[in-house]
Image (cartoon, rainbow, N blue to C red):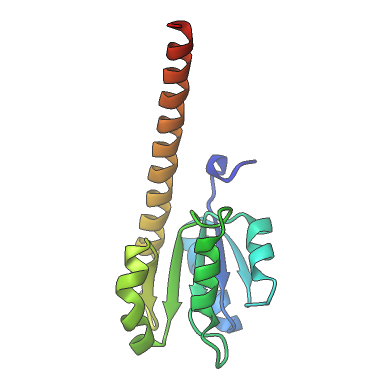
Length: 157
């Protein structure tokens, strides 16, 4: 089933702390009714993301001592198959995240600072999922209009 036809949205949460992963699962499944997939960062993360086909990705910025969350964002946005997946970067590295916030938001990536308020998380998730649906709807409308124009153009020849 294509992800746009899923009733429950699939959210992939990537974090290296099990307690944080479980907290996200509890909030997003029980309070918002989403399907939640939990994972820790691994070198093959791009393949995992493509296989999982999430409607939204929530990722930490720092894993252990490495700032590979930013590299993951870059890789996701540079790959045609994953570039349109909405993202939220969640981190306690407030200073570093504030430095990148303008750039992230310009790319449509949500920013959530730890510690966060549950309602703040739910609102950000909702807005990113609604934005995805809006973009998908615009794409479908453009495709239909393009196909209709091509059909009309071919009958006028």
